[in-house]
Image 1 (cartoon, rainbow, N blue to C red):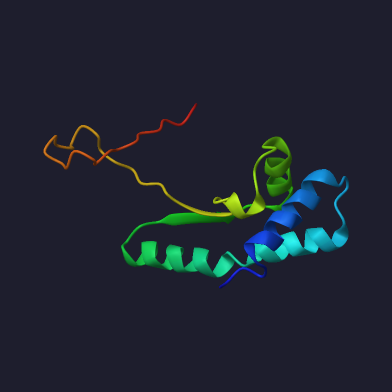
Image 2 (cartoon, rainbow, N blue to C red):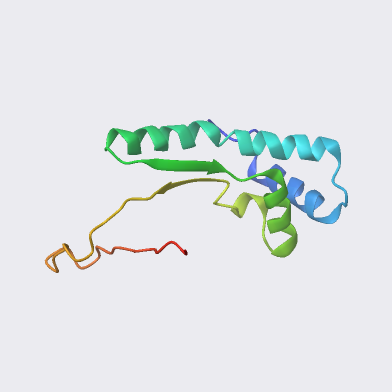
Length: 115
């Protein structure tokens, strides 16, 4: 789904959101439209990962976290925010059973849960 506004309109919205405390209700509604515009693409990615037998988790950034990001990173333009939607795959892997013959750019990341 295309975004509900142009790149310049996104950047102007981001400037208003960054500089106005509290943000105008109309700007918050526009930001929510931008966030929801990513929902279809995120669903397509999740469906594709599921079709590969993977178990993805997905999330949309909230308007609060986007506002925090715009205010924290002063040079950030709203059109430059690339993590409004995200998918993650978490799989259990046996690192001891892996061979070193995989391709050179193949990497595994192991995370331990804190007890």
